[in-house]
Length: 443
Image (cartoon, rainbow, N blue to C red; front, side, top):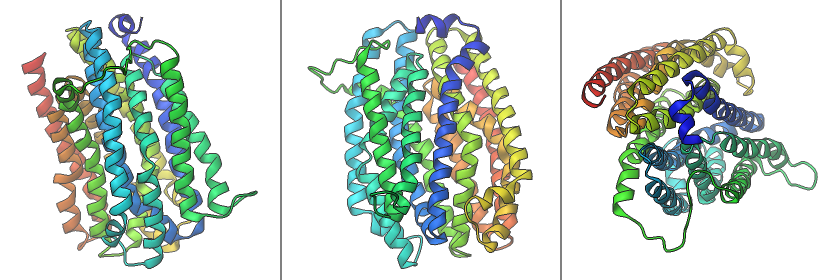
């Protein structure tokens, strides 16, 4: 049924049915990120900065988990489109194997790397102490998050978008409820501050993972997960990481970009790190719905590419771009008219308000270009062209923005924020050139 739906259902209806649950779950996830940061910011600006500095490492964790899962998602969807059920089953099982390997990596990072990491971005001893505790907890206990992401992508590859939404919703609600209890100490629980926020995060991830495992193994979802007699296959691992490795690099580029920008901005003022942290949390309300939409869009495009249905493939891309432009328009007007109110949510100091209001208004000028770039990157991933997505993301999130910020920060801070618009414009040109070549060579 799911196969037929992705190949025959009217595209606007199909994209809506497959994307809305993911968009809703992403919005809930964005709400969790903002609520989590809101509670921490009530402790102090230093506590907020401690969590903000940890954000790139958390993004790297998500990058490894999501990138690996995206590779499995794309391979499973293409195998289903080719009517190769056995290969789809084996790809899903390999996804579970890779979750264990990824968790071991971040266990080591959490246990041994956290002090060195914080020393690169702040000299404040309180920020370092709180941040190291936070980072150790979220990295060492990240197995639930990594496994949850893989299960979501396996289900999405078969056309099931409802259950992944329920998983995301469960984790977000539990986290939102636990945050004030563990941070401030309510009822029988002691006040644990920043560490309480970390414990709430990992507990909610494991709770959602438990639900995910129950839903996955309770009934058939288009793939058969038989773990007995499993042997890793170099061919399947290569196929998964053919898209997955570029996807990891694509998502982790944001992490490295934020780390680099934090390092550059701290030389002007450590409070600029807090401003940038506020922006990235707020912009998730705008970008997360688009990422949710592309979660529904990607298996549709991958399936129809595998089925050699060019018309449906290109039609899905056009609809995705239109939806992204509509979402970005709403985000632009929100940031232009409510910048001060948005900053006030995070208990911003007068200096943060002075720096942050123009930052939000200037950076939001880049929203429309970013939306189109995200859709084209998803298009390349769906076709198995991970290198194209990697090139586009490198141009968007590192190659151009780092040198521009490095130069502009000495001239004018508002000019520094304008770097985001310049970079997205250049990247759109790169995306269009790549798209023209792909259309000529593959379609």
